[in-house]
Length: 344
Image: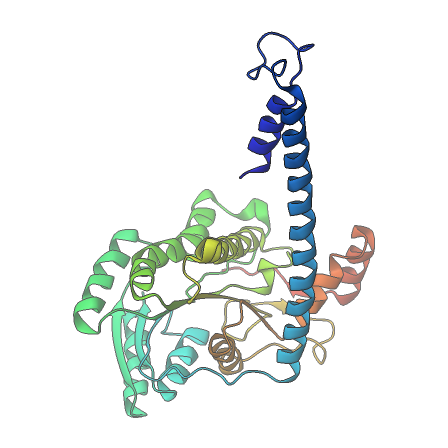
């Protein structure tokens, strides 16, 4: 019984003849027993609350110990042999490396990219290594295109079991130099494409009772920087999407075997960040697409909800939000890391 309903009922039971005539219970007939029942119910609710709180403390302590144990003794990585992995933006950079590495682990890879030539090359290279891959030209920012290509995938390959949303664009210039079309395109590719693919494949995950959604975001989805305001906004939106989906699918034990992994890499050498600025490159080196793909797949196989690359950035993000804002800004100025304006 909900606390609010119980308290209302208790208030009704405790009504006396001194209260207004509208009191729903005539306590003048047998006030003593009714008052006692009301008191018992109030006590019962407080006992329940205390028990729930104690349960929370015990459960939290157990889960903390379990997390520490798994940190020291990680579980074996799950096999992905035979999984159908869909990768968007597979023609270049991280997406291409993801396709190659997933195929090497025995997965059947579906490659999507708007650049058909690059996408076909990824598919061909997977085939040369003995892997299984299918390629489709797809504008993932278009809901209609995503739906049409998804129907083809169902006919040619079957249902996707691991969805990797990787496609993205990254114009680097001050906020006031972005046109409305720029902002619209950034959100179409970096955010709306996630909605269209997830809406297309999540229903089959629910029916199967399993599945995995991966979103390749950016460190800009955790910490903002200049010359990337729309991009940072889009990556924060992706984080909100993944956090919301994670909670919705786990709520009341609805779909516990559907997993979600958000990926937040530092600057990657894919050509998107044309003028990176790093004061301490030995501490924060630019990452390779191959290394990022390896870490992403490890995160998928260990069913991590958050994968920061490098992992120290995650703890740095937490620490930065524990210190005062002025101290945080002073530290960011000292590190002097970001991207400079690029012509294109």
